[in-house]
Image (cartoon, rainbow, N blue to C red):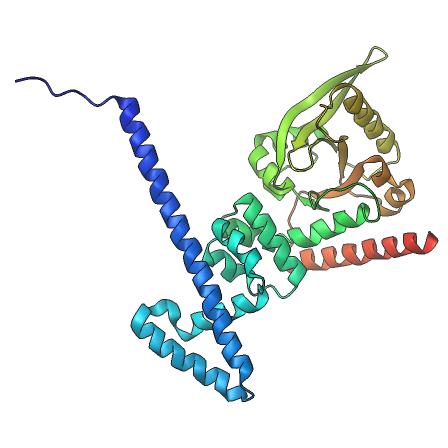
Length: 336
């Protein structure tokens, strides 16, 4: 009896990978289709309810529809879920936006987004979750950590300038995951960031890629070292991050300008935009930053917090910071 030929490992592995990828794609396709069905169901019910002038009609018709659809299609179409579908179509009225988002996000993601009242905030998290392929847990985490509000504070720095950051920065940055001990040094901070680089990049946002630590540059025979160097794929820019343990000082601007000019002359590729600098300080000294107009030189300044305050305090501090940032922007416009 002849020996049966053995299956080559690479062939079997390839076949398993193809089948697993196909199954995963099928699940994604089903989830995407269901999400679009839910949107269309919600829109159709909304249209019918709006045509009626009686408030009681809407409540009764939804209950009647739920009873019929639940018998035919199961619990997914109970009253509570139908109302979510109606809200879904109401807060995301543009089907052309929903279609591509549904390819990246599940119905559970949309359930998290639907209760967000502010349209700009809702659109922000929809875009970021789609770009970053956030899990449901990560989406909730980002909302809890007030990424939208922190991004808005940072964006005010570059308002009315030609510097396009495409919502890539925040202020402050929350580095509570580093678990730093009292009395830490800049080197401790840098080392902790590299130890938890994945978490740090997640806090930075989608698009950041780590390039180098303590990049050495030589000028007039003197060695200079950049703390952290990243690249942002969407911005097509090198991003220099300098870490400072104290309040912002005007001297930090000159230091960062030197680094950016060196990178621009000697390291920037032909298809890249000019480098940007991000100075992370324990305290940002807002008035000095505003007076120095650092954004015009491609430099952002932001605070970092090594401890995450309770929810109420976080909301209060960010609210106060946002009001102050808007006031500074309004003063600048009046001066102009």
